[in-house]
Image (cartoon, rainbow, N blue to C red; front, top):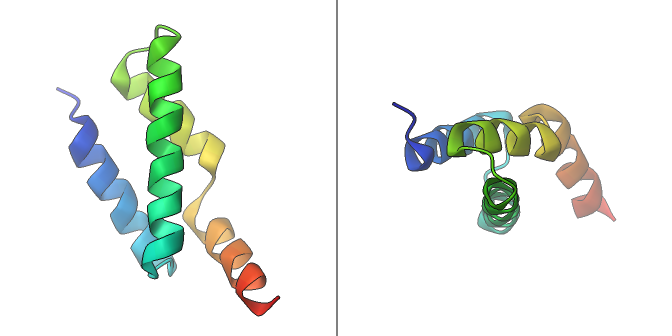
Length: 74
């Protein structure tokens, strides 16, 4: 059985492993993820499919980390 909250915890762990360790970007990403999941479920998708699509839309951990590093330098 799919557990949305557990999946989000695991997703956060992936972000931490990739190097996104500061609270602000991580919280922003999680908020964006949750908003997108909510949007997808309102469109009729179940939580699991909504989570999968939302994670893909946000992006993979390593490229996100590189983007945050770039923005920190500017």
